[in-house]
Image (cartoon, rainbow, N blue to C red):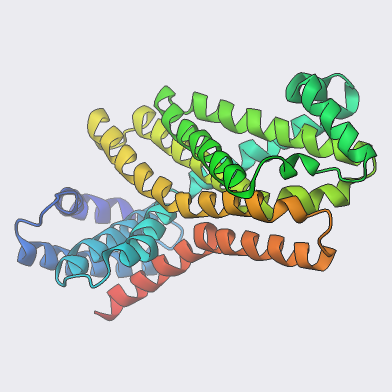
Length: 325
C-alpha cells in the first residue's frame, strides 16, 4: 500500500486516539486499549514499509504517550515522585529533545562570541563583567588564587545566595519563553558571552587550568542546568508560535505544563551546584587536580546522562515493551 493511501485510511483513527490520550481521565479505557493495539500494528507496518518516513516518528511518539497513559492508569504507583523523575520527565525530554540541542547550539555560539570579542577588543571584558569585577579578579590572579571570588562569605551564606540566584536565572529563561523564545535566547546569549569572556580573562593571564578547577567544580551542573532551562523556554515559545494541530491556547497550556515538569527536574541539579559552589569550589585552588577532575567529570556525566542519554533509553524501552504486550 502506498504511504498516502495508508495515511488517508487511518488518519481519523490516529486523530481520535491523539485526542483521547490528551484527556486527564480516561473515559473509556477499553476503547482506548483497542485503539492502542491498532496503533501498535500501524507502527509495525510503517516501520516495515515506510522506514525513513516522518510517519514512523509520529506513530512512535503516539505509542510512547499511549503506553504511559494506559498502563500507568492501570496500577497505583508506589512512589509517585520516583515515577515523575524516572519516567514522566524523561519522556517529555525525549519528545522535546530538538529544543535541548537548539539551546546548546545558541549557548555554545554565545560562548564563542564572548571569547572572540574579548580577543579582539580589550575593553569588552570590562564592558561585560564590570571594572570592579575584573580588577578584583586580576588582583586575585596576582595573589596566586585566580578564583578567590568564590571564597567570599560563609559556606551556608554562599550556598543559599548562589542557589537562589541560579534558580532565578533558570526561571527567567523559562518565563521569557512567553516572548516566543526571543527573551530566552537573550538569556542564553548573555550568560554564554559572559562565560566566554570570563574564561578568556584567565587564559589571557596564563591561569586557565587553575580557573577550571574553581569554576567548573560547580559550573558543570550549574551551566548545564541553565541550558536545559533555556531549552524549556524555547519549547514554551514554540508552543505559542507553532501550535500544530492544537488550538493556540491549548498548545500553550501543554507547553507550560510540560515545561514546569522539566523545570522541577532541574532544581535538584541547581541546588547541588549551589552546594558545590558554596562548600567545595572555594577550595579548588588548593585541591589536587585529579580530585577536581573527578568531581567535574562525575557531575557532568550525571547531569548529561539524565537529560541527554536516559530519555532515549527509556523511550526505546517503552516502545519495545509496547510491541511485547
